[in-house]
Amino acid sequence: MKDKEKEEKKKVTEVSPEEAATPEEEGQEAKEPAENAPEETPQEKEIRELTEQLEQARKQSEEYLDRLRRSMAEFDNFRKRTEKEKEQEKTKGVLEVVSTVLPLLDNFERALASIPEDEKQNATAKGVEMMYQQFVSTLKGIGVEEIPAEGEPFDPNKHNAVMHIEDEKMDENIVCEVFQKGYSYKGQVVRCSMVKVAN
Image (cartoon, rainbow, N blue to C red; front, side):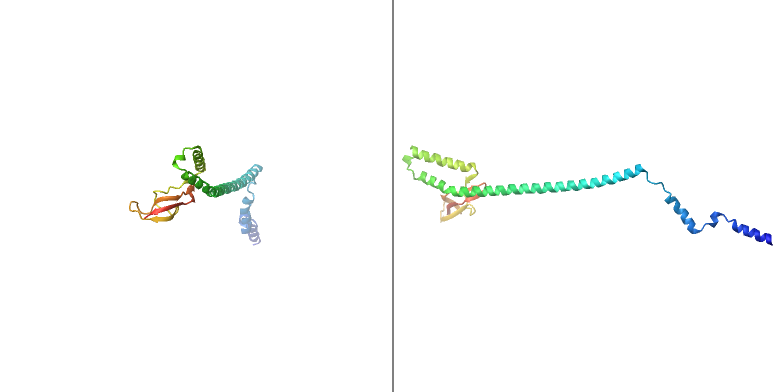
């Protein structure tokens, strides 16, 4: 009997390590391979760090490029706005000057109209005519032109009707006479023509 009990005890104590392992120990053994994974080499670490730096530099360069494009667009808008404002100020100045000198042009025309036919060839008349032509030429040179009126359809934006007549020989709303010439600067009316309108 004693020999049998000794053999059974011996069998119990001779259990293999695999059979005696507890579930916790098995879990630890399973974790060991992950923990024992090969560490990052210095070269791999350097490559990873350089890659991160490169990505950061790329993002920063894109941000700087976006800022530059925005600044360029803002400057271009500012330049266009400034040019437009300068052109408007120039136009305003020209209109003020031209409207001031137009009465002088009217006086030249009245002076020429008052010269008798037999005196139009003398030196004084020719001198007045030359000054008048130079005046008109100078105004044309800066963009001031006479507004067509006589024989044209009446346009309230360009013509100021001060008289109406009935004339069967003429069509309706036709300018038949000009009392005072009108002028425009680059398409903008400086002064309307003072006219007589038929029908």
